[in-house]
Image (tube, rainbow, N blue to C red):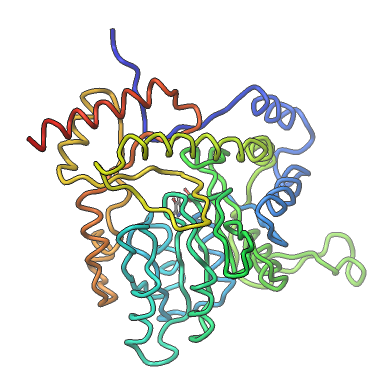
Length: 386
Ligand SMILES: *Cc1c(COP(=O)(O)O)cnc(C)c1O
């Protein structure tokens, strides 16, 4: 009998989700109806931001975030190489330059020290912004990044695609939920099915800044607004004030997003239980992502480092375990290699990439499936360290 496939991630859709979608399908609105604003309101409440703007995917959200912050052609932004390419591409959409700083060797998130070194090696005003990523679900300490950004007059976009439900604790002892807009100007979330909340495609942009919120709302829908115009002109009147896009989320997707969001806390809890079992099994044997004190990892991923990574990857596949690699460092992708911005030493990122492998991590992963995964890994290590 064939063993079932165990992927590294998988969405969880239940009857409640299905009913919500069917209700919207049979309602008057398929797009731009009441579900979009309901989802935005609930999402903002969940992360603790003042505003949220639903978008067609996180890549679109990143694009209008960089636009709203006013990046001009040739201006420079720093991000981490250990992320999905979209975290960097948004800068290129606006004809900006992407510079990379290194990751911390233990948390795998953008290193504050490396970012500081890069900024301080250039003249004042050289960089405009920083895009830290809550990699694997581990919340970046944005208070530290905000202090650095303030010294150099930089904006911050928090790419929180991996981290709805995660938080760090600031120096005042306050829990800061990912994407709450307290220290970052804008937060970005993805509702791709492999992430926590599945809408098929979808994303959310969060902020506490009203001016940014207004810009983001406009850019999402062609640069068009109707606000406060009816009185002078008539009910049909609108203005296109700048060049925007159609980056809207539908009501159907928003209905699904609402029911998915309501299960997120439970899902993150499950993910942490799974992470704890991995840690217990691997402690003192295999290196895994370290968790700073008072930080809650939302665990999109569980990443370990092993020397024979390629062999382990292939070995697991022969046992129907589809682990994955996150990520090929963005600065080594042919497109970025060719344009070649940046001169920082990215040794930690490259070392990490040579060893990293993401193990199955999703709320419906069964304990016996996880035990099977752990046993295969330990058995592989036994074989390969003899
Ligand atoms: C998934 C992801 C994105 C892009 O999300 P989409 O919704 O697929 O556009 C951006 N950044 C990170 C870190 C991601 O993991």
